[in-house]
Length: 183
Image (cartoon, rainbow, N blue to C red; front, side, top):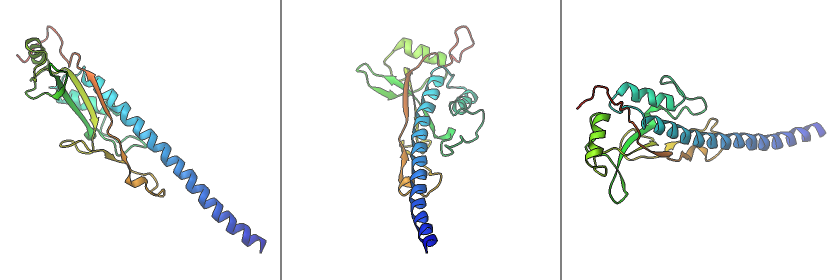
């Protein structure tokens, strides 16, 4: 009889203990995913401020490298975050200090230099770069759904990765003086 009681007690305590351990691991992974998302946007924004936005190959490489990769492979522990979720936007700065997406964007970095020289607060002068992680590549930026590793902890599947966003000052945007330009 004592063996039966010990077995029942062990099953009850072990179940609760394992749920607590798995819940702690899921919470730690959620913090890791949020931290990784913010780091990825920081890396992508810094690279986008220096990369020629008119070069599709360079922009693809930028997206992969921001995700610590050289190709379209998934991140370990964060398979839901891919290069397709990185939204890179080029922003202008109005005279009253409001950031807005560039309306009539320059064709190449040299054209941006000309646009900014003519009117630094114009809607075709790229002054800042914003990178966000969104669930969809276009449209409204919505949070990326969080994918639980185990599915055991209640409520984890209803969570979303907060929208990570980084804004940096546009630097060269790939412009190199003395090279052939698109002008």
